[in-house]
Image 1 (cartoon, rainbow, N blue to C red):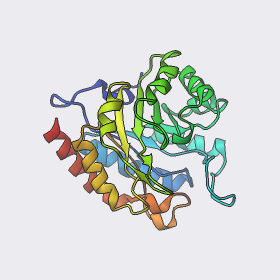
Image 2: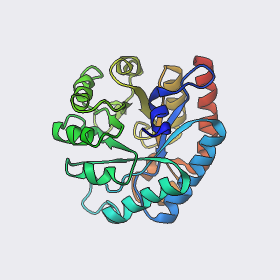
Image 3: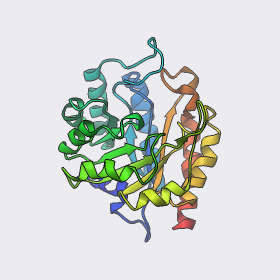
Image 4: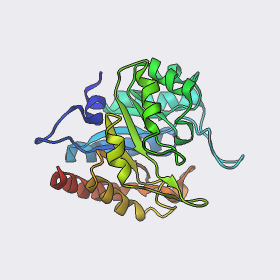
Length: 264
């Protein structure tokens, strides 16, 4: 098992406590240059702050709202870019899969797999991911209770003993809004190897709210956060309104590390 992936789900300690973990990157691979720029910046920040980083980017978006929405630059092209991120920066990379047949192929290019929130109950998908023997991050569905996620984790562990992270994705609260229940952090921690909180898809489309969500999440005991970032969110090809500008990430992570040290 890659050391950094293991650390990212709580397998390592730093000054007597778990190190802060971050899954971060762009929503989707837009092109090589933007992906490399974001990866380089995040790795420099996290190395300096001694934070565990899993670099994330979807190689394809299969759940866009509109037919004309950007879905990717081609599966193999994007996967090869993600593999280059790992080779060039010695960074661990995680990407989404949407169908069972994608798992084995994606696993050839990345070090961890992610199950999207809408698909967190899909048995065939979870089993296929488990069979790759890679660590897995399951994003909790907006329609799921924390307790119900034990079944999703159980499906994976019935096949493999690799680490399983759960990322709290909030719960639906009326139409077109989600609310993060901080109690879920404690509830989820008893059924998986690490709990993160998604602070960008839960910010209501205003990235400034991500800062308060992130601080509250770490104070409430989360192992880390999930965030999406871009050098120019206004020009991002997917989910730009939710993303944290790349130049603001270091300040946020510095604050979160300080909170983690106090809570720890």
